[in-house]
Length: 125
Image (cartoon, rainbow, N blue to C red):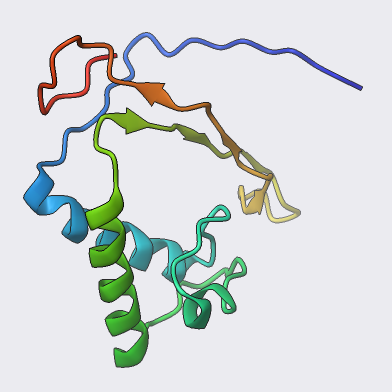
C-alpha cells in the first residue's frame, strides 16, 4: 500500500544558528531528546543510545550522561555541513486518556541544500 501525500507550510522558517553556537544548540536538543526518550534514530553515543525509549515523565540526566552528550555535540558540530538541512515530521495519536502521547514513526525529509550560488553563511530555501 503506497499513499502519496503532499502538504505545504507557507510560513515555515528555519532558524539560523551561527557556527560558534552549533555545539551548544546541538547539546540542548540532545539533552531534550534524551529527557523525553526519543532521538529519531540519531546516534548520540552508545551509552546514551541504549537508554532511548519514550517516557511519560521527563527523565533527569546524571553528570556522566551530560558529559557524554556535551562531548558528542562538540564532535558532531565539527563535522556538520551548515549548508544542508533535513526536516523531521513527527505525529502523535490520541491515547486512552485523550492526550497525544502515542508517537508515530518520524519521517525525515530528503536533504535540502543551500540554494544560493555563493557560499554565504546563510541557508536560503
